[in-house]
Image (cartoon, rainbow, N blue to C red; front, side, top):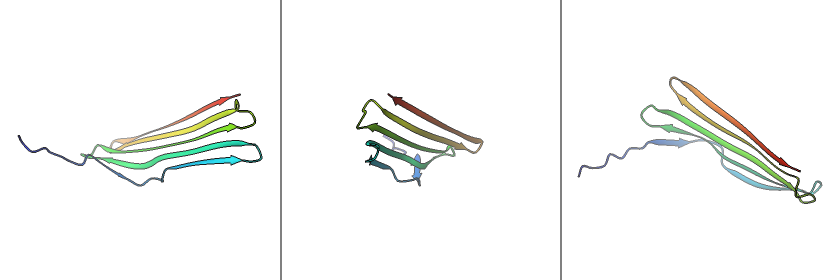
Length: 97
C-alpha cells in the first residue's frame, strides 16, 4: 500500500493560560467559581485561515440562600481568512431566586 500522507493540519499558539478559581466572600457568604479557557490562535493549513476562541464564566451561589444563584458567561470565536473576518460573541446569563 502507498505511504500515508501525514501533514500538520493546524498550529496552535498564544492565548491566556486557563484558570479556575473558587472565591469565598465572607461578608456576603457567597461562593463564586471563576473559569476561563482558550484565547489562543489555531492556524489552519493550506491557507484556510485561523480560528480563535475564548470562554469565561462566573458561577455564584449564596450559602445563606442557596436558591439565589447565577451563572454569567461570555464565549468568543473568531474565524479569519484572507477575504474577511467573522467574529461572534455570545453572552449568557441564568439567575434563580
